[in-house]
Each structure stands twice: as C-alpha cells, then as structure tokens.
Length: 114
Image 1 (cartoon, rainbow, N blue to C red):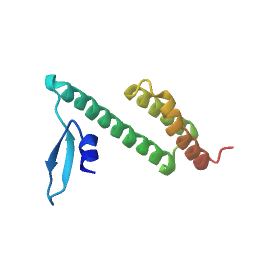
Image 2 (cartoon, one colour):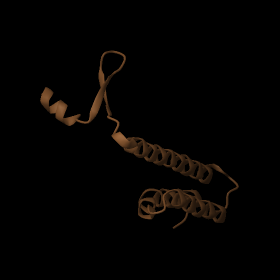
Image 3 (cartoon, rainbow, N blue to C red):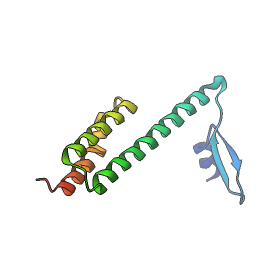
Image 4 (cartoon, rainbow, N blue to C red):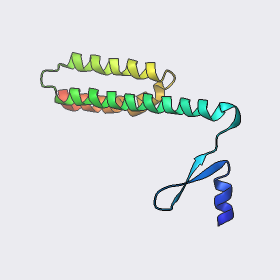
C-alpha cells in the first residue's frame, strides 16, 4: 500500500498541514517550467471564473429584468458568446454544448417562445 502511494505521488513533495494529514504538491521543475505552467493554469482558471460569473450575470438579467425585450435578450446572449470566444478562442464547441442550451431554455421560458 505504501509503495503504491509513493508511486502515485512520484515527483511530488509531501507538505504537512494542520491536523497531521499530508498533502502532496507538485515538485518544482528545474528551469522554471513548473512556474510557467503554473502561471498558464492560474490564468486559465481566472478566465474560466470570469466566464462563469459573466454567464451567471447574463442569465440573471435575462430571467429577472421585467423591462427586457426579446431583442435585447438576444443581443446580450450574442455579446456573451463573443466575449466567451474572445477569452477562449478555440472553444466554440464547448460553448455551444454548455451555455447555448441554457440560454435558449431561459429565453424560451422567459418569452414563452415555441
């Protein structure tokens, strides 16, 4: 069992945390490769969180603004799509799978379409 845990956590250093449990973090690579990879991951995480917040706000406005017209809601959805693709240029399919159905369902319910 201990050998399997060592093999699974190879290249990682144990770091003790409060309470005596052990947490494994990736070991730093020579030449700073780990730092640039870490920076890229952090940047992607920030962009992803920004996208989630933006889409949440757009869906909230579409569902709650009583004076919003269908045209304005459609324009907001189109602008949100453009902003999402600006943040993640080659992820159009992911957007179409994740967010397009949510926005369509919301607009169908809100404006009683179909």
